[in-house]
Each structure stands twice: as structure tokens, then as C-alpha cells.
Length: 127
Picture 1 (cartoon, helix red, strand yellow):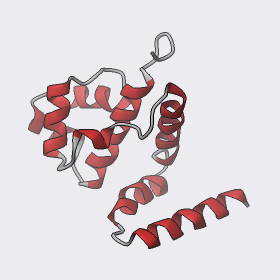
Picture 2 (cartoon, rainbow, N blue to C red):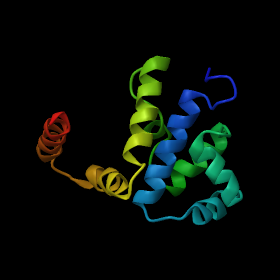
Picture 3 (tube, rainbow, N blue to C red):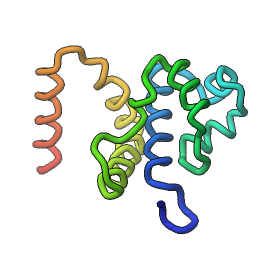
Picture 4 (cartoon, rainbow, N blue to C red):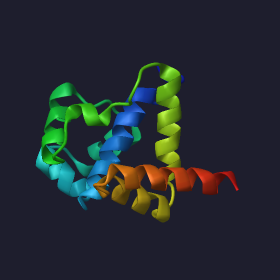
């Protein structure tokens, strides 16, 4: 359960992942909405976690965005890890630079290179 009056941590995480994937593909909220049969305002509510997305609609979103339903859910289990994941996603998508990194990073095919970049960013963040 989320905080009273706030979105559930998993709903917020799923919404943030939908937003990232949609952005990575260059789709607007309106374009996604049209393809899944809802208003763009509804997509906004899904992406913020304000509204929960049904299993059937999430399945449609995954198909439109060319990914699996599982890719929208947090790794591991437990509410604390989910909250940390949501906060991390919100933090990285808060700026245009962060969104650019979040969109491009999964497109780096070389796993070793991705790991090196992750280590570099972690080291730079400590300074």
C-alpha cells in the first residue's frame, strides 16, 4: 500500500517505466493513448501512478511499446525496494539530461560497456 492519499509504490513504478519506454520510442502521451484506446489524460494518470492500470490494458501498452509486461515491474520484491526504485526513476527523469541518459542507456548493446558507464557515473556521483 502507498501512503494515504498517494499512489501505491508499485503503481508509481509501473507508470514511470511506461513513461520511460514511451519516451525512448519517441511517442507522445497522445499517441500512446490513441493506440491503447484511452485519453492522453488517462495515460498521464497511469504514468504518475495516480490511476492503476488494469492487466489487460498493461498488456496492450506492452504490445504497443514492444516490450514485455514484466519489464514494467520492479526487480526483486518488497515495498522498500519498490519505493527506492520509484524515487530513482523520478530523480533521473526530472531533468532533460537524465531523461536522455535513461532513454539511451538501454540501447547500448555491449553489456561490458553499460557496466563501465554505470561504474563511471557512480564514481562521479560520489565526488
